[in-house]
Amino acid sequence: MQGEPLLKIENLVKHFNVRLGAFGERGATVHALDDVNFEIIEGETLSLVGESGCGKSTTGFTILNLHQATSGKVIYKGENIATFDDKAMRPLRRDLQIVFQDPYSTLNPRMTIGEAVGEPILFHKLCTKAELPDRINRLLTDVGLPPRFAGRYPHELSGGQRQRVAIARALACEPKFIVCDEAISALDVSIQAQIINLLLDLQEKYGLTYLFIAHDLAVVRHISDRVGVMYLGRLAELATREQLFANPLHPYTQALLSAVPEADPVLEKTRQRQVLQGDVPSPLNPPTGCRFHTRCPIAQEVCAQTIPEWRQIEPGHMVACHMVPGGLHA
Figure (cartoon, rainbow, N blue to C red):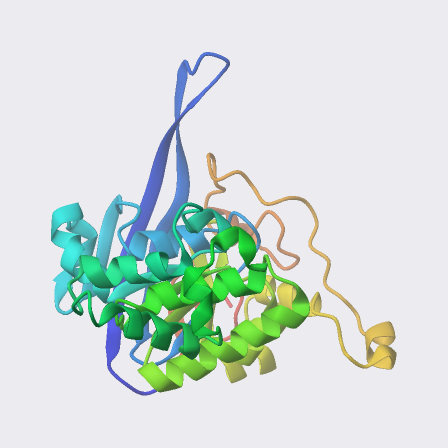
């Protein structure tokens, strides 16, 4: 995808210090992210996929500085915001927003929908109190809710309606970038389609840029411009939607795509799946070399010894694998 990067993520690392043992007598480090690099182009939807615990959500939280990065850079407007404290981040919260997985837990049950949507508008002084009701009504209309819902409370709404409120609240700040952290996974399938179409409509209307975090590859294929595949805190592959689904290069990506069911029952019955053996290793003690080598069907000795280089195979198609043709040790 052509365009200027809105965000540049360079060598991003996030480690969590934890205590182990019955009385917390042993210290350990969770390697949530290690050396993650990519750019997010203005106006695009970049999706991150992978198994639970691979670091997708941690990537989104660290980009927004909800988690303080251990090291690395998140470049926005020429500055490394990964080093900003809460005070320095405050004016940037207007530009960088998030929609969480569970809308009910993110809405204050004591606040009406109008108060929840209006709170960030008043905080950032985006309009006067007299103008606020019209602005709230317009936002609710934009996300497909009637303005009368402004007087209701979260428990009076369905899950899909609450997620629309969460989206309206994110839009209230007039952001440039929104992290959608599993924003549809808690919803019924029929409602998921409605929310996906809403996000696409809002992107076109407001010129938004999305980081879309999900595990449903069918949804990712519908909404994404580019897709990044993560495994155990590292990016395994990054490509345009067309490149990734037509020509997956990394063995992990191939295994993920083989698990997506076919709509044609005849093809579904005859196709071969790549079933990975074993479980995902613990991020407390990740494998040396390529982190996928313990489950990889084509792993060689070099895979256990050397971290694969993050390299471009074709324009826009990046991969980290020793065994991909055209690279070192291929």
